Each structure stands twice: as C-alpha cells, then as structure tokens.
Image 1 (spheres, rainbow, N blue to C red):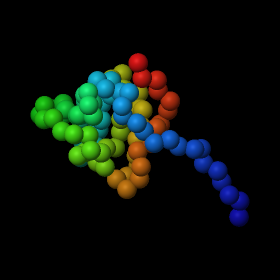
Image 2 (cartoon, rainbow, N blue to C red):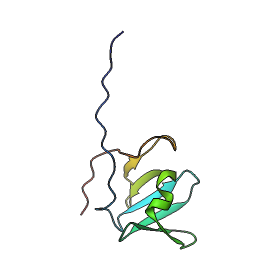
Image 3 (tube, rainbow, N blue to C red):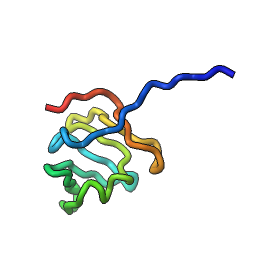
Image 4 (cartoon, rainbow, N blue to C red):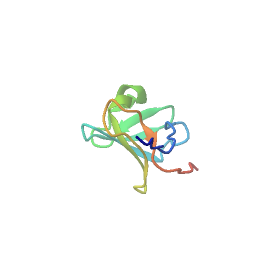
Length: 87
C-alpha cells in the first residue's frame, strides 16, 4: 500500500488578528476578536474570553470574508487554511 503525504498544516495563532477577524462557532454564533484575546458576540454584544469558546470555533474569517482558519469537527485542531498576512 502506498503512503500518501498530506501538506503540513500549522496551528492558528490569534495574536496578530485583533479587530480583523470574525469567528463562527459550531453553534452558529459569530464573534469579533478584540484586543487581549477577548471576543464579542455580534448579536448579543456579550464579551467572553477566547479560551471559553476556543474548542467550539469552526471558522475564522477576515472582515472581507476570506477564510483564515477552520476545523472539520470539534475534536480536531484549528488549522490555518491559507497564509493571510495580518496588518
């Protein structure tokens, strides 16, 4: 049987993306990343710490809608989808 090599994936780091990304969870809630790894719910304006929702994050997108990182299910790691440079 032949071994198939998958492209190397890198884990996603949130530090460079404050106020530049939206975070969608598996429960369909949408958050905006703020300074200090704080997230704010778009609908309810409730503020939470990123670590409270980290394992529920499904997709991280830029404000323009480009996918930055995603995960297939709750048990997998959050990986960079495409190299996006933070400004």
